[in-house]
Image 1 (cartoon, helix red, strand yellow):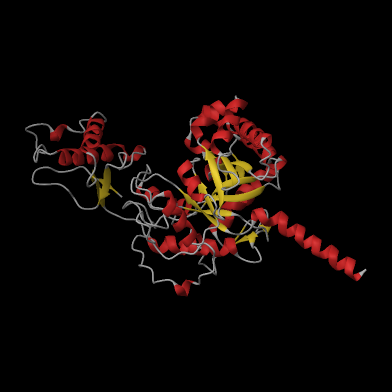
Image 2: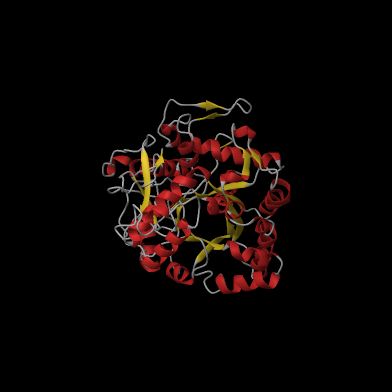
Length: 464
């Protein structure tokens, strides 16, 4: 009986080991490709392994990257790009063709384990595409089943803006416009196929927009004294990350799906940004990422207050600083590595390296909001043709935006494209920042605290 009992216990633990293998606490990396100066896929794969990553996400099914991953131990997540969802959602043959072209040539030599159908579709794509998410997921899953590729889990990534309410966490609720038509059938699919809710979680953004009320240490996992107790659930929180994750868990519960597993599809902190982007610096980025990795790799798993002791499989965003990402400066500065392959700061995704082993970090200088005037000028070394097009666009907007740079006017000289574009960008931004305009112009502009005004020519500015 004793032998039988020990044998039974052995098989019990063996089953647990096998069934939990796919959701181990190993941390992965998001490998974005929006840069014109990034290393080759072969070098990138070596760099991914060098920082201790055990998984990698790519935002398409790039064959060069998949070939570079061939024969490695890295688990891989690939993606159907957003623009393909509408057609795939109504055409099983297209879904079959996508799998035949993008999965079958590489599997199983490439350990493709996850297939995301779209990336933050609700946040970044036209509304008509939203309703294609779940039908496309179903058709992709059917195509996988046809080829007996049952190990590959199908999902889609969601940002926090799919929630109508997230505070307190127990009040987490999906937006009314998507809850029933999109999220509920998605959760049903994820539950039925034993897949994951792939969630993008960035404490940087709620902290940076409300830094007066959210303590930075609470967002960076460094506070030992700041606690928040949810008045409804009575759960106590010690960091912003857990609050955000649990708000989604409570939202799923309200739709009748309390047990769908969470996968952290993206999390990270920017290592730099524009002058008006508070807290985007190397010190905070290293602190956040090192601490979130400690949490995610802890043994035994710590989970979150709503799901204590549960593994949160995860990817850290991102492998590189990507210089072609649109939007404010932070978007181009989430990388763990510079494009030349060197570390922005010391990091180990395995969680095994103690903080004391890393080089000292530069002290942060922008944890308080910048106060003063800011101008928007042409960035260095940009394409002249593109700069000319951006100048024309800026001048076509607003009220007398470019009058002072017309011939004979006070800002016409020096008669150069860079000078005229810089004036136009500053003039445009000063008029439209209050309605959401940024100093970006597809990477052609950059904000500066140095007044570019010269002689009688006074550049318009924005006051922060």
